Image 1 (cartoon, rainbow, N blue to C red):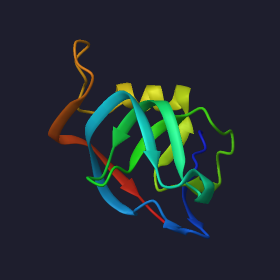
Image 2: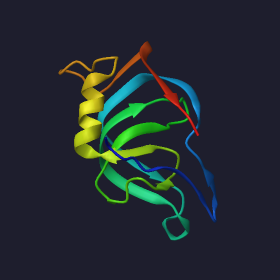
Image 3: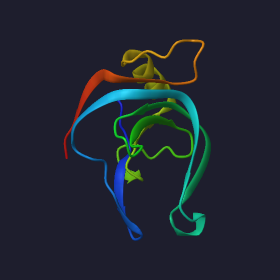
Length: 116
């Protein structure tokens, strides 16, 4: 069993991971993720690995190198996983990313149910 860090309720706002039925229809092996003011719970993370998006707003499963606090709510809505687990999930879910591409999008993918 692998623990994840999910969305949290911060003093600057609620960033909860959306419960419900989702589809993994967009994937990238790596991405620079940044948002907000770094002094007020913002983030600037180059090279976030093994990203599997589940919402149009950017909520995703992805690898995490900046903390080791899995099993607690502490993200901005994403599902933070140890990078090794995220790589496994990336390779297991659909759609497959061709080796010659940096991303893929397909309306169909692997179905994911997230509960509260």
